[in-house]
Image (tube, rainbow, N blue to C red; front, side, top):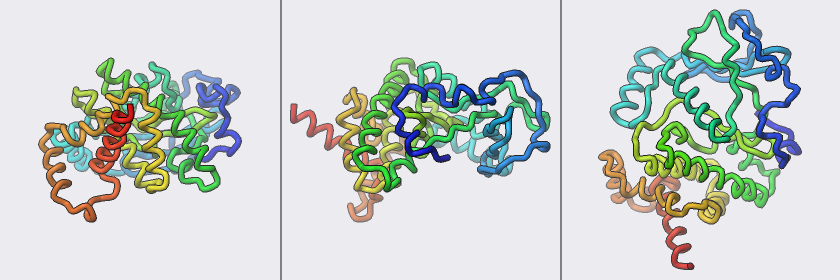
Length: 307
């Protein structure tokens, strides 16, 4: 979903309401019952979820159905792996819907902007526990914004430097409150959007269930910075890593990323660390979580020595 170039650089506070005030979908919140089969719809995605753009109240909205095309056996298999191996919440459709709603509640409670929801819109031909209608937000994903050659590098870095303190604020609140729902399990540059000078967040279907929030913060930082490297390459990864260290207010909390990679006692993490140590540098992935952790610690150590 693309935005107008002039609009994406709007620095007003209008982004705090991610839909225009005159949008007919947002204006009319009366209960509404529909049938998906009766609507003209645009198919946006479909596998684990079905995603459609639909007409609604003279505007458009996005219908997310958590019951996708996967077989029930695969949902159970993924749920077993989540609960037993990776420490994440259930992959079952109704559970993912409920988790996403709780996450959005938590993020919005603390002032982070997510796609607006229209729970008053109900569908007679869909399972009640497995869908939600969201507002259509025509912003620009981080992934597309930072890869856009028309946008100057300095402008991209200015946007990144503006976002990092907001990222830290969420991490700080998560640690202070012990709320796993504030950690982005699927966190990377594909799941942040620029809209009217601010940031909009989405895709919260699962959470990590561990209770060590510092470790979960560290895991998310590694995931985001790995995606920066993979999507944008070293020419942006290096200055964005420099800006992260410069602009993230709590350096001790930022160090949680290195601690997650190199001190987490989890057996799988320990085995992965062993594999990373045994690989020759030339055979290591260019942006593995261990490489990102080393890059981060090197910068934090240099910053500490310079003081």
